[in-house]
Amino acid sequence: MKVLYFSDVVPAALNAGYMLMHRHLARMTSHEVLILTNDNPKARGLALPHPGLRFPDRSKNFTRITSRIGSPFFWLELEARRLLQLAQAHALNFRPDLVLTVWNSAYLLAASDLAEKLAIPLALVCHDDYEKMLPAHPRKRAWADQRLRFIYQRAKARICVSHGMVEHMAAIFGSSPTDILFPIPAEAPFPGLPARVRRSGEPLRIGFFGEMSGNFDVFNAVADALPKVDAEFHFFSHGVVGSDRRELTRRLRVFDHGVTDPRGLHVFFRDNIDVILIPQGFESADLQLRRTCFPSKLPEACQIGLPLLIVAPPEASAARWGITNLDTAVVLQSLKEADLTSALTRFRDNAFWKRQQDLVASVAQGAFHPEKLQRQFENILARVLTQPPE
Image 1 (tube, rainbow, N blue to C red):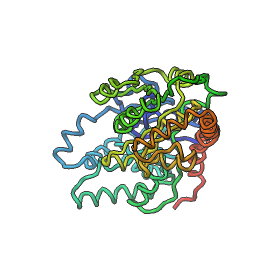
Image 2 (tube, one colour):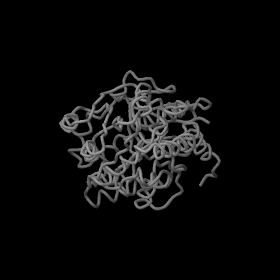
Image 3 (spheres, rainbow, N blue to C red):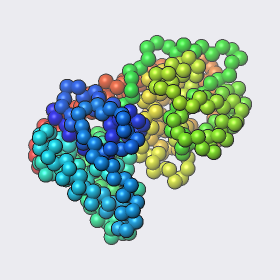
Image 4 (tube, rainbow, N blue to C red):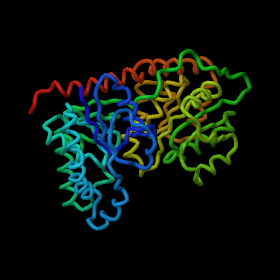
């Protein structure tokens, strides 16, 4: 199978969608892949997992041009023409079987146009929505919706990261066959039980890693509960140290460990942490994001092999997943102090802790195992090539 990846979501060892696409493409060792992406300053110096070209980054023109024409989407339409010209010769030389792109990408329109011009299938990965790029004016919005509807419905594969994303896209563009593919973790599950064995009288240690923005309501609610249950909160984050983070770190029993590499983080958690916190904030402005996006840290946390505590709104993707796959006692759908203290107290019971650890280990070996998720990804792409032309 020859796959042309055409997106400005650079498949590089960064974070979020960049990391997910890097992990999937890096594992496609038995297929030919050509990467056409942009020269994103954040990814300069980071190796691509396959041969590729980086087109000049034009994001600096984004604000200047869109302020004149009134919508980011119109800038994307102009960019699509330029990108199509840049990509076409490389695509013709490579002769791909399909074009793979990311939905929330500035290259989306160009990737769709290229697949149409080459008369080959288009496969979409949807891990974020496009709302921020759409014009507010009703007539302009209708035009943009029509363009996106054509792309979404024309695609031969639609790969979404959550049930909420599938529902969101169906509500906008109509129901279409869609695959759900959870974010792929970096490594297979750690073997055996974690090294830490909490002794009687020791504090319960709660751990978190990942992006903090949008989750400080959860962090502060957890911090409020720490003295009541004799617990500590330890976290790692690559994010900017802003005022919210500084204020959280000043609180008693809260420890900011800064940044470390993935292997060092996993080892620290298995040696020092009892429970991993998976938060999705309750701010109403972020509710759509919580509903549609799936936290990549959740599969990653399962590979570490510790029990999870999910704190998220009922409609959030992590809460929906947790209710189905974990004990409901570890899925909190509010920030009530009584619920938090009760949940944290349960983890002090060794039998309860072990039951939750077994559930997480089972998920890590099953639905979230990276080899299984990679097979699912490649099978979806292979299936596209067997579909009859329209």
